Length: 135
Length: 267
Ligand code: SF4
Ligand code: SF4
Ligand code: SF4
Image (cartoon, rainbow over all chains, first blue to last red):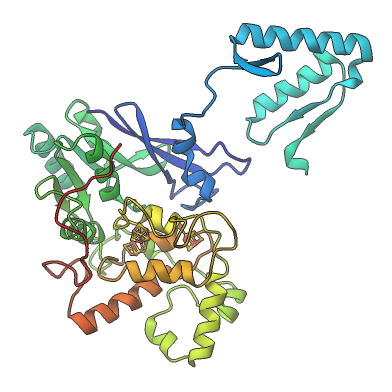
């Protein structure tokens, strides 16, 4: 019997509330607010309280999907990234780099957001970068 | 005192009295609930008794859903002990499944500290003081108010509710498989603002003979609604009318409507 209580950060929004996950035999059983966390001081919203439900949800996507002939089908990461890169490349070639915009998210870490803007500016060549927290 | 507790925990684990022992451990500077085991007995050295409180007995129930044959140890403050009593009264916990090491948490001049985050002072803002109830208000304070004033203050408090269900989720004695607060024919999930005061009154009625006054719901409420005060009043009535003290009186609650069969929630 293996039981762990794992501290983490809620992945739903950019607030960054502290949460605890109850993990029994590798299975995520529940979420609790972290009571001493400076951000949420032991409180959570309804989304945070249910983090374990979406991790365990049977409709959760576990692999990328590619739309073909109007229908989504499972594919590998190589296929998905390859397809996206090809499309981006051809859009930039035809319409210029400013035809692309990159939207980043408060749910990502600072480092991931940094990488995304770097990708927009250096790889694609546009300053069209925006963030959902700027609403 | 901590060494004493640590030795007892080690002994219980080493002598196979319990499979896991639930207490607290400092991790990344936070006192977090932790399941100590025989395999990692050296971790018991990091055991702490407070000050944060979590519903350890609720974690125990979750573990027992997967391992119904396990025996668990719990570091039990007075509120944990009352919660365990209620859980066995309501047939949620088989006798002997949980062993406790009791911890006196009451504040006293003779002790350096008391192990309870609830005792940290809370300052009420001007709006709360003006329109609602101050932190730490007592039922007597409320009863001194005219009924209309009391009602409008309660409504001010209830209207802040964001229906996060945190009060129910953290409550050690909210164990129902189907909860009235989520049932589509009763309160139901979804629309905000919630139906006030119905949402809170339904829960208040359910806490009769059940709430052990641990205050975890109030701690978890993002809207800082004085829930403990509400359920405290409900149980004052239970005591007056039925002579039943929730969590300490032996025997079944006067509101026991469930059968005696053990029905842990299916996975
Ligand atoms: S004080 Fe709140 S959390 Fe504690 S038993 Fe009562 S209702 Fe449940
Ligand atoms: S006691 Fe009431 S509020 Fe608590 S889980 Fe049961 S139905 Fe829900
Ligand atoms: S914890 Fe507070 S805000 Fe959340 S549902 Fe309960 S009363 Fe409402």
